[in-house]
Every structure is written in structure tokens, then in C-alpha cells.
Length: 334
Image 1 (cartoon, rainbow, N blue to C red):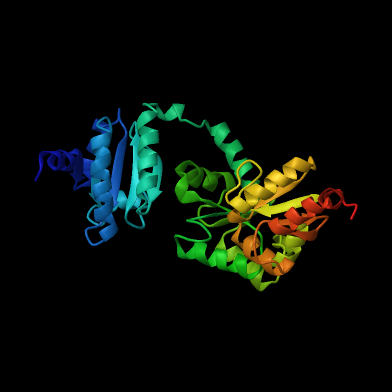
Image 2 (tube, rainbow, N blue to C red):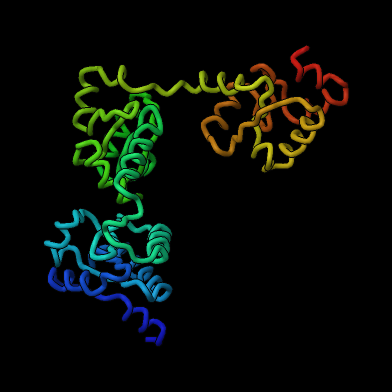
């Protein structure tokens, strides 16, 4: 084994008992302690052990520990470890953060953030309790319908969250979501804030509706559709978008930065007219990008609309400019 690899391996400590773990928490209280709950049968754990070894080399002031989750069940149960790999972050013998799953970039980001934030006492947490309540209030009000879940709607990371997303999508309910795995403070704080101990949790207008069982009940009683806001159908959404401003340009990129040559050229033409207009970046919304082609019966981008009516693409706009017809059309005179 090369010297560098030996140093890296030595930098990650293996813990084999609850007593050893408690002792380590006490001894390393002054620095950041990162604990990887792993299992030898999980290939993603082996991969993340390699990531830990690299992080240990980069952050010598932090301590990195491996703990076989099934071999030390009392510690795993105490910290609600239900899957591997899971990472817990400790400072001053207090748990300050958590990461579930094999997410190397997120692990790196969290280690960098906590290692650079210095030592602090449990009473001097980064977010005082009042600040957390305010933050949770803002989060629960962030959208008319907010789902706090494990993972994302595209990639739920527990069966209950997956079922919740399926029910909401089946009923065409418009919702935003928050991944509680991405923020341990929110994950723990929201349980107290809402007096609801489990996830997922669904909020409407900042008020807790409940978890999966409640949503299933509301679905069965046909009340769900009256409580949660419906997502507009695509055609209605496109009608609203094309009428959002008197002159609307659907393009790749935006006014500040066109992301294709055709979009850049049409921006230059519009800017030369002095007419106010708004843009929509079709690269940021695949539903709009594909749907608008059918809605307008126009297969390419950019697309220019005046008062909700399609004018055309770059070639049409160029022609209109050369004929002197573009300005009257943009002003709505034609």
C-alpha cells in the first residue's frame, strides 16, 4: 500500500461498540466528528468509505468514523438509522446535521461547511430557536401546497413519500416540496413545530393537513380535491403564459443571455424597436417547451407572441422588420 493511501485509511477510525462511540464523542468534542453508519454488504457504503478517506486527508482538523450499523444496534436505534449509508455530523458531542444516502457531492459540501464554521456550544447554535420557528413558518408558507418529504417528487426516498406523491399527482394537485434529508434542523424542528412526529407532512396555506394516512382518508372521502389547489391544465397554462405580457418571446435563454444563435438574433431585433417585452426560457420547463409546439402548431424556437397570438419565429420577424410591418404589429396596431 502506498504511503498516501495508508495515511488516508488511518485517518478514518472504525468504532465497534456503543461505549467506544460515546468515548469518541467526548474526546473529539472540540472538532467536527463525521460518522458513517455503513454495512459491509452494501456496495455504495464501500464507495462512500473511499470518499470519507479523501475528505479525511483534506480536513485533518475534523474526525471521521466508520460504524457498522447492524453491529452496534443500540447506537443505530438511538439516532434513527433506518438505511445505509447514513452520515451524522457532531460538534460539542451534539448532533448538528445528517445525510442519508450515497451522495458524495452533498457529503463533501456538508463537511466543508461544518469544518469551516468553527466550534460552537449547543446553546449557541447557528440558528436560534426563534429563527428556526420563523424559518419553518416561511417554509410551510412557501407555496399554497407544501409537501415535506424524504427525497424529491422525482426521486422519493421512502415508500410513504412515494405514495403521497402518487396520490397528489393522480389528483392533479399543484404542490412544491422540501427534502427533509437535505436539512437536519428542519427535519427535527418541524416535528415539534407541527406536533407531528413522522414524514411526509402536507401543508395547505401554511396549515398542517397531515401525513399519508390522513391524505388517504381525505382521498377516500373525496375531500382532498376541495382542500388542495389544482394544477392548471397545460393548455390553460400556455394560454396564461402567452398572454403574460403584451409582447412575449419564448426562447432558449433570457433577455440577459441567449442560449442559441436564433434567440440571440431575435433579441437584437426586438431591442432595436424599443418595445417592452418579456421572455420565457423554454430550456427551464420541458412541459412548456414540448406543449407550446403543439399549442401554436409551430415546431421550432424562438416563438414571438403579441397579445397571446403567435407572430412567428426568427425568419418571419426578419421579414416583418424588412417590410416595416414589425413595429405596428408589436404595438398591437395590426
